[in-house]
Structures are given as C-alpha cells and as structure tokens.
Image (cartoon, rainbow, N blue to C red; front, side):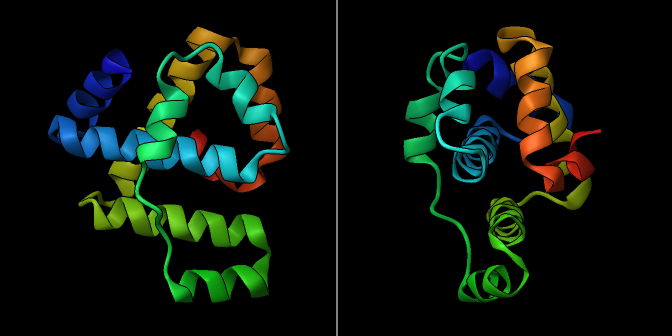
Length: 130
C-alpha cells in the first residue's frame, strides 16, 4: 500500500495522510458497491487493502443517504465517497486522478480482466476511471 499511497500523493499533490485517506475511501467504495466477494478478489492481490478499508472514514451524509435511497445505492455510495474525499481536501480533478491511479495499480497487481469485471459491476465508477 505504501507504493500506491506514494504514487497518489505525488500524482495529485497531497501529503501521505491525505493520500492514505483517499485510497481507503476508494477501496471502501469498491468493497461496498461490488457484488459480494468481487472486491475481496482484487484485495487478495493488494496486500494491506482490507486493513486500509477497515480504517477508512465512514463517509457519507444524511443527504447522501437520502439521495442514495432516491437514486439507487450505487449513486448514493458514489456521493458518499466523493463527499468523504472532498472532506479530506480533494477537488474533483484530484479525485478523478486518485481513482485512475487506484485502478491502474489494481490492474498492475490483479490484472486487467478482474479490474474490467469490477468496472462493469459499478457503472458510475467508469466516469471517474478514464
């Protein structure tokens, strides 16, 4: 995880604590939004991912929860994740770059086929992914 945190910190210009929070929030979003077991399959290739998820801020707001109920759980989950990342001090372009970097790292470690399966399971993620 240190390698991924360092890559994100350098790429988006934040300190390592902010980068660590960002990675945790993004991985938690994946765990929450993927079909059961899918995120864990990716995490098997990324040592420390499960621990980072357990330490991630439990983001979201009542507004995000309300929107999630109206728009569907994935949309609400995306809103909660973006809110958590914004609260950590990231702007939208930084969030997009952080997500891209997590996806690239996952592709390097778990392979592009599994990552494409994840992206297919979370359509909202694609807008941040590329």
